[in-house]
Length: 395
Ligand SMILES: *Cc1c(COP(=O)(O)O)cnc(C)c1O
Image (cartoon, rainbow, N blue to C red; front, side, top):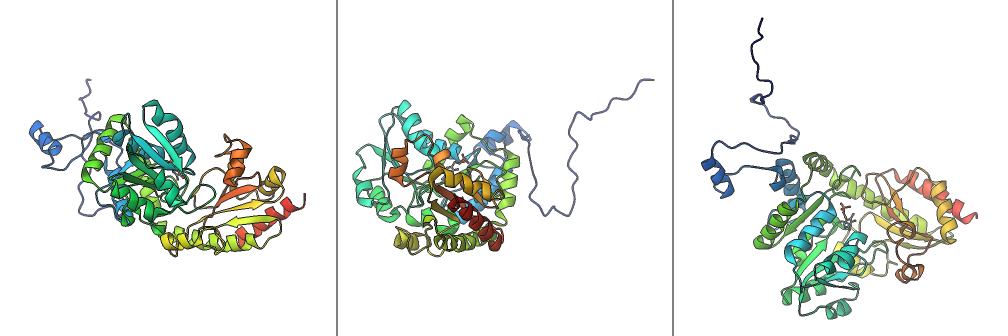
């Protein structure tokens, strides 16, 4: 007997209910159907709201970016990209052209440095790096064709504090756009828009998402036209974030304040503890009075110097190996902002491409570690780090 045809190939309507889920829904749809061509016109021309194609935007990205907008005090709505570098790329590709000049801090995130050194020059964009802890020298590097300035408030991995206020003021006076990568600082430490920055970017991958399980970026701009340029370029270049990653990151944000406060409290205690140990040559933590930019850290970050600290062991590479081997439960992994503590060794990872001379000019020896402090009970961290330092000094 012939079986009757069925339509399981078609989508079933989602059940209509009077109650709503408490949790943000996850929506992976690539496309959205509209009632008619006229209705689609209304969407494209802004008379009606609605999504069309996920590369152009999707609800999980929007929910996430609205939350970060709120944290940053963003003047226009921000957007999410597939990685922090996608956000930084979007800014450069949208806003620079052949003949422009970009000025950047000399201790930016490694891939941003590479963007300045390798990628932008291929398209005829001139780039210069200067030391943003010296505002006068940095401002002197501005050229007539400078279009953008890229800054990070806290440098990687030596945690120096850029002299943001005079640099931003000088850029504004010349109509140059200031882009601040606020990944290390987070909006809990500093909100660049409040200081006059034009564009804020984040690697959401780090403290905002907070669990080392998604890769995403965020960018927001002050000026609506600049925002639109970045948006259009992003859609054309396909810097789209995955809805699932956006959903995960948004989930991470619920606990951001709690994680940040606890990690920062741990960082301050661990920094003080390390500073008291023999064979720790120096500890760099922006919240300590002996930090080289302590006053500026206080001025810009107030009571929130963050969860990042660096320290240097006597004994070079052998001491570094002994340290990581003696505290195997602290993940030796080149990232930051995970819920638990991670340790990075710039000489063998982020800064391995530099000559030893360049590294030592930056203050990065073979015994230098950067720590992204997590939310573990502080007693455990102190015990593990003490064990690591003891093993390093026993050599
Ligand atoms: C990690 C990081 C980036 C790049 O972000 P991804 O999400 O890894 O692409 C940019 N800037 C800073 C300061 C970072 O720490």
